[in-house]
Image (cartoon, rainbow, N blue to C red; front, side):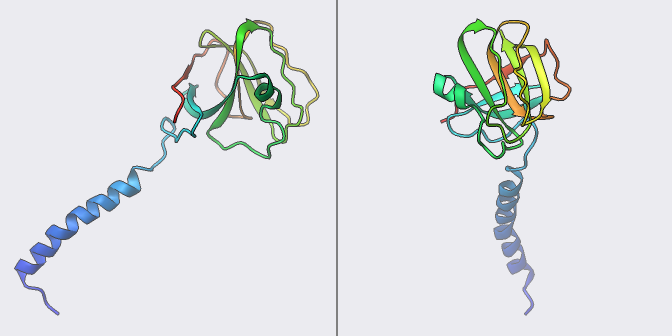
Amino acid sequence: MVLDPKALRLYALVMLPVVIAAAWFVFRYEKSPATIPIAPGSIAAIVGGRTFSTEIADTEKSRELGLGYRDSLCTDCAMLFRFDVPGIYPFWMKGMRFPLDLAWIRDGKIVFIEKNIPADSTVIMTPDTTATEVLETNAGALSGVKIGDGIETGATSK
């Protein structure tokens, strides 16, 4: 079957929007470090040039459980513990099944950090300064992050 040139132009004209739409659909989900999907009820937390979909632990019960008894945490996920007043907030690895990095935060800056804490650690990590928040990530996620670095948190997603 041979198409005449007029039919071929019409076919190309019809198919061009289909090809453009397909390309847009494929490439709009391309993941970059700064744009990850934020889970419902979570916030975006940006630290060290990385964006994390961050669960909030701001009640006694949610802070007590934390990430304990989970088998894993997604690569771009974290948990942010929020406290009502600045204080010395010690953390331990009770119930943890995977290693973590922890960063204590006050006024949008990291004030104390512990990295690559083994899941079976019995050490109680106690910062040497007050904080209002503590960020937990997978071990290694905060490599390159240091005391004094800033952290930004976005609005809660719906």
